[in-house]
Length: 338
Image (spheres, rainbow, N blue to C red):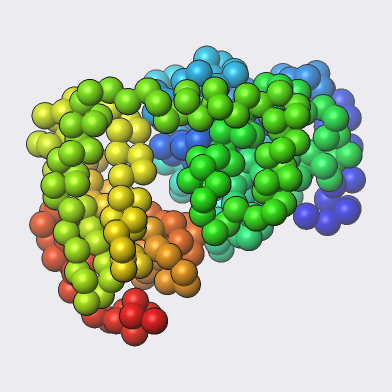
């Protein structure tokens, strides 16, 4: 984002405006955290702000300051469309292509509002007037922090904003253990703690509220874990029947793919989750070192994301999808054995 862009945005925000903030479909901690941080910041500046999420999000995020004010598009379509139509400014956070918002795509495409994109995923679409894209930064929440720095308004970060930003950085870095966690990330986190983010309480709120059903489902997933040792790959599958048996709710499979990646010698891990209602298999991919799962997902499973963390989908059955995945692996033999 150029100095001229920042100057323009400062001018845009200098007077009260109707603003909508949008995360991606199936929002995670970084999407909700960055959206609510921006919401609190803009509200404090006197703007009329609405956060509109395409659909619902996991229970472990339903404590973040301002969460109860989020409008869910799929259950409030008319009201949400009206807000989008009336918006003068739209922030799109933690995604880089409007199709990532599902049924919100068309209203957003048709919106006359000036759009601002803040995101760290690869290959952003050119739909926004102002684009802040940096794939080297661990999370959109860290980018929002730097965005406020660019606006010369870091002092406006209060405990609510700090808490929201901490959530997104923590969840998108695997509690600061992924390679994307830099020295700068730690300095940002230190400042957020100084500004009121209660780090231990935040960690507990996100990670220490497992239901018995969720742990039982984890047991099923680990029992379904398979390893392809010669290709340093592990994969997990969960059928709709297994999800139903353990009363699956949104967020229950969060992080399970990382168990495959934690196996000694494994460089590439995947989880395949059956979604009968949508008629798809949802796929999450993780990797170590330089194995590019973003490229893998784009090439084979209509997806994308980051080099070491991406997602995709398949319209085939669960067994057919797994068979396809295993059959593709030998093409990447050299990269997986390096």
